[in-house]
Image (cartoon, rainbow, N blue to C red; front, side, top):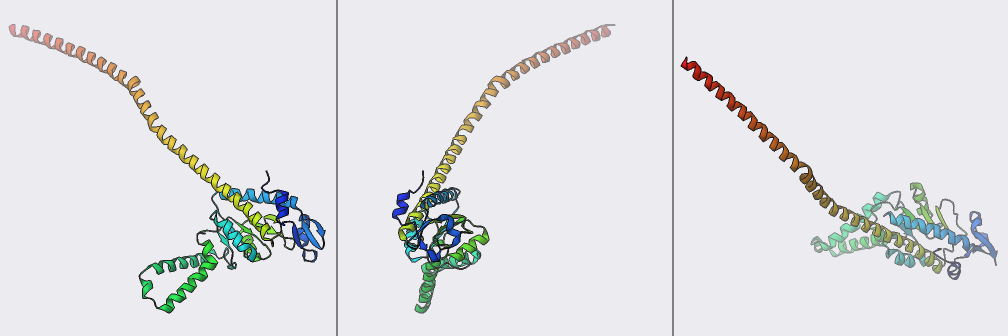
Length: 301
């Protein structure tokens, strides 16, 4: 079942492209027609591409990896931050920090510095600083929070990038391509779809269009996380049941072996050994009696 229908995309204005003179010829396969000097995007192809991207997003979330959402456009900032924070995925809604992916260790150092400032404010040494030093540190902390606050929990490179406008975020696209990270992108008629792994042809300027497509991706991630949790709970239950059954089976086998095999064999062997010992003792006694009679006769002679 498709995750979106034609009417939803139509109402959100997903089909509106840019002016004809601003178009990119590489987007020709996704353009339905031209009307009043504006290109119209083929929504049937958009539905197919949305379903493909959502299925891939679901698998990434189910595998336990993370997707980084990038949307620095004014009309997309609040929408993306609100939707993505519900599934606890990292996002960038301010200026893209250059080298965030290709120079990831440096970004991690900046995040650690932000954490150390937080610890300092709770320590007694914070009170010993002057008013000017406190102000400088607070400004530095606010600047780091604005740029890196949403990726503070990102301890390693993301598994994929979701970009609202691939033309505006071309630096992020290049970094992802250099590292081989898959890119999901909302591509308008003025953008180049080459190099984008999952192209979603749609209007990247209308807030309703951005909200609709982003909500579909977020819902796919939520489904993947839920399935991952269910599989994990099922595995834990199976492990517990195996641990409960193994000791019981072990006790049964030991008891059966002892009763059926060990005990009868030991009794038979003990009885046989006892009879043999008795016979040997009788023989020894007879020999002793013979020897004693011979000695008597010799003494008499």
